[in-house]
Image (cartoon, rainbow, N blue to C red; front, top):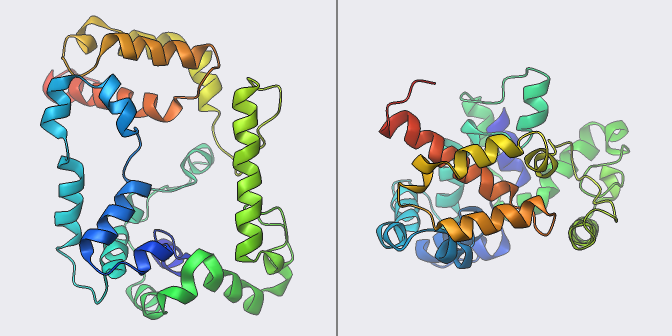
Length: 264
């Protein structure tokens, strides 16, 4: 049922993707918002020239080829097909919460009839979770009166405009918390693990022991001076590089397992 819920929520869709006139336009829009976790400017500083030359444009080209393998009537349909078959079944936005409660975080199987029915709903009805909200209001009005995490308001009062305003306030408060180094509490949009604080405290020695290890640096993938700078900026509270640390740690551990042949 997980993938059908994502389809009804309109996740991965946006007005720009839906208005795309070609697969190129849709792929670029999807890649810019969903496929770039380390900004290009940071890549130029953090990654070595050799790695940049070898990987430049490769990720987008692979995504474009993958999107082109699906049969769809619209460019947006190609994006949804990719997410249904390759992305959503392998992940969960509530991963940390589900892991702590020992609930299976993957959904490799979906009811095909339910998923097919969800895909037949016009995309503009599903955009910004409006179909999901309408179904909840119609089938369970009692639940629709409960506050929703995206707005703090009851679901039946969560219009697209209110969702936009409330999420904007959330990101503004989070930015203010970064600028004041936590003096202004960030607030939580949903229950998440506190990775920024963990990397500054209990995981600090482990993080530095891997990323600044001689073996990591000698691979020639990273610029040591830039790597040390982002670690310093994170540890002093100037910036939050938790996402980047997760990617760099995963890449290095992958190298140790599959390139070095290290036993876990």
